[in-house]
Image (tube, rainbow, N blue to C red; front, side, top):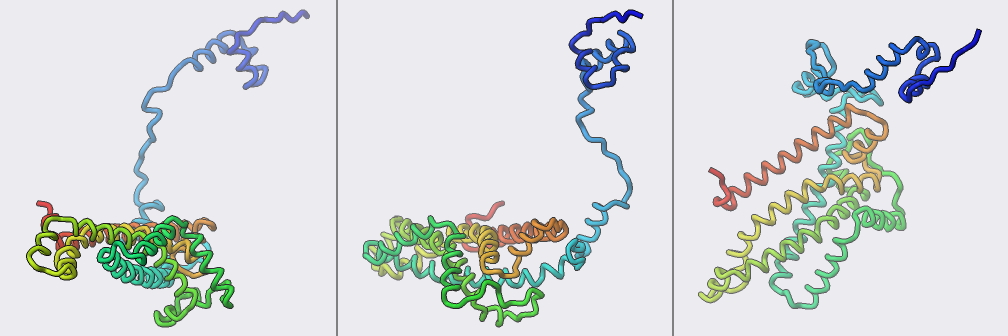
Length: 311
């Protein structure tokens, strides 16, 4: 028997590499059908997902139903409720952030008052240059430097606070790791707030109302406290709200550096261990925190400056 070699088209040769030999030898009709299938284009609606309602017995509906009832689910790592893991971590993080933020606000307020009243003094110029340098240093380097000093003076690599949240706020404040962590948070915030607050006061001192008040006999100090300071609080409050929202990243860095069992450490561990219920619960908590800060800022600005109220 003599085998006659037939020449195949490029599409048929490609098909012969994808399918068994018997598939391509079945005749020219099959080859033609394969070429037609390759040239054909799918309808546009093939690109859209197919939606179908499968009832309420699905994981997403159950999760939403539990969420509205205050249940964030069960952790996949230790099978404990997510809320039981978030509460002690939330206590540590809130106390850490509030201590550092309160310290930063006090230092920034008095520094801005002094810098604006004595803009040409040597102390003001040196402090402002130091704040500019401190503001340019990454936060993790500041945390590592303070942690190195802490270790040099006999500090421990691990925090003495129990991870179950059994410590009282007073014991938390007495913990050296948490105090140094609060110092790190304050150093993150002080340069930006102090420089912005000083710049706002200096701009208000150049306004005509400030010069008019001084021309009528008011002392510069009284004019500053009575007129310039209230007009500076509105833009400064907006900056403070942005700083509070961005503190989440700083708290995360500090908690990991000082081994504190806060929200930052819990979030990092949930990502590394793929603990999705804890991850989603913390994400929702941070989202609500951001919305609350924005709403509180708008409410406070409307009280400080009625001109900002919208009709």
